[in-house]
Image (cartoon, rainbow, N blue to C red):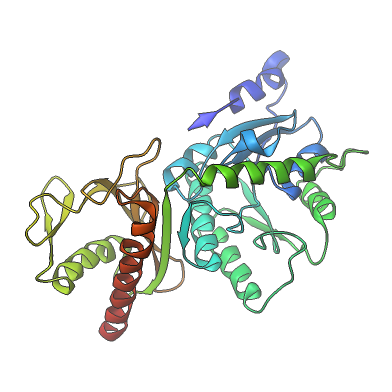
Length: 359
């Protein structure tokens, strides 16, 4: 986690002379068109934290303390919302987060919302605020069939961990009007004359830089939605998947587990594992279970985060998201894209059909 300025430094002036602590407001997605305008509108009474994947490319508003966070990582999300009072959810899956992404925007948005809500509850955040239209990639995009269902699901997930949720109807409002509505919901009057001048240019240039950088990246994100049998939780689903994979792939594949929490997937006739998975438990994460992709012939080495295999149970349903994050393949990119990546989709499709028959 890269944190430019923490809330302690932000509030130092407020504590001096016995004055009360300023409320800390975190804007997740602060580099976007709504978030950057909101940062310009909020008065100095609030201490502001901007959170994004690539804040250096998003353009810095002078009052924002920046924290780097990938909300596809539950662990990073918890660190990003530390010591925050009010958390504003402006995240969406409209911009690419990996060189190869397999999955629908609905499933990706659900993952972001669950990690955000879990992190807010873990840190004692007092309120979450979101726009009912913020999960559209850009404010100018038309509303399509299914967007309403997606918004309702995201809102339900954001409220599911017990943190009070305020949903602001965005309607057809532009970024400036949406930012003003959030400002009012926070109980502040928008600062006169602050309209986020230059935000559109910064957002566009930041996105271009990220897109160019992706050409040099080799990471993969893959998310599939499954329906689990009654009574099965995320941890049980994760281990059942590995047991099923061993049966499904026989005699070409086998899966071995050891007491140290490691699982190894072997191919017939090859002594070294294709993939090695290591349990990674997050305190209080009763809805999710994660393996770190810690090695294997098919796993490449990259800087920063290691790949993960996550099973995430969605609230109020038997639906589960099976997700691979930050995976770096060892195969040449085109070979991986048209072989291993396609095999993974077929395997997950077969697993989903198996679960449906079980139910």
